[in-house]
Image (cartoon, rainbow, N blue to C red; front, top):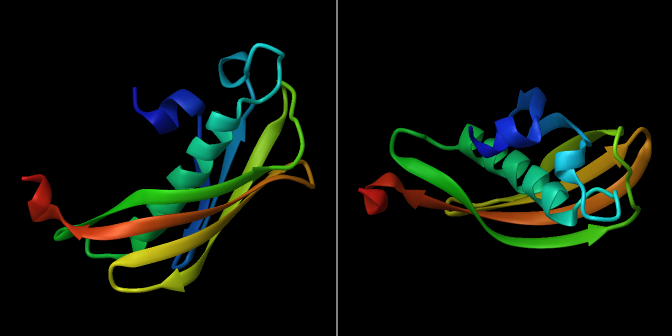
Length: 126
């Protein structure tokens, strides 16, 4: 099982420079007080930025990997909620992409991240 399957992240829209997805908040996503764990929200944000960056590059020769995140958790979320996340490119360079990711519970903004993805040649992984 990969991370997207574990967190039940479903991409609902993907276009050049934009990715949208949903994620339910279940017991497996919460910390001991029953609120959404911040790490789950961060995983959602980095996942969307990574998908977006990989959509913008030649995946036959390069790969995008999250290297830096700045995150603010704005509101707590309880189990049973359904999150919607939107990632938009804010800086596009040959070897670096910067994304703004906003996460909502219903219509309320609960989290905002800036995610940097490095673009590297696949050959370094061989």
